[in-house]
Length: 168
Image 1 (cartoon, rainbow, N blue to C red):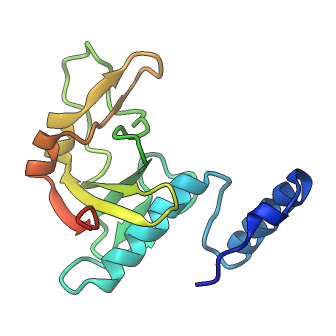
Image 2 (cartoon, rainbow, N blue to C red):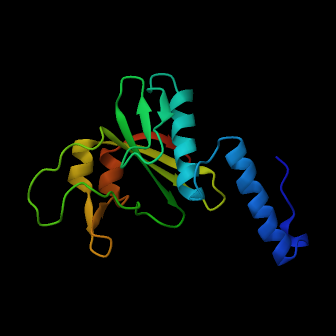
């Protein structure tokens, strides 16, 4: 793959190049929003699931569907969260209960897919958790007043590992 030599571009050219790439990504239906990290994770998750035999084929959920980013042919709902290096915590899940509520929230999705990406947007790891595993590992984010997930050794030991590019 040909790498763009960004060192030769001045600041304005770099910004305009970024805008051009964003527009081309939208034109090719590779992204739907300006959340490039999240869009990259959703693309990688759907592409990976659709290319590995034995995994469900996924398609993007309609825009604006809360907590659901992809659907299987069986109608299973997938929430996809992307973590870029060096982070290890997902964005938040809204609408799945309050911290001190005590009630088990209504099931919003069947699976969570966590996509970890390297700084250059290459896939690092793709993990899958069930709804019950999500409930077990969710952590309260007090500022956002919603839940998130941290990729810990315990979570890694229990998650289904779909892809792992962390070795070498």
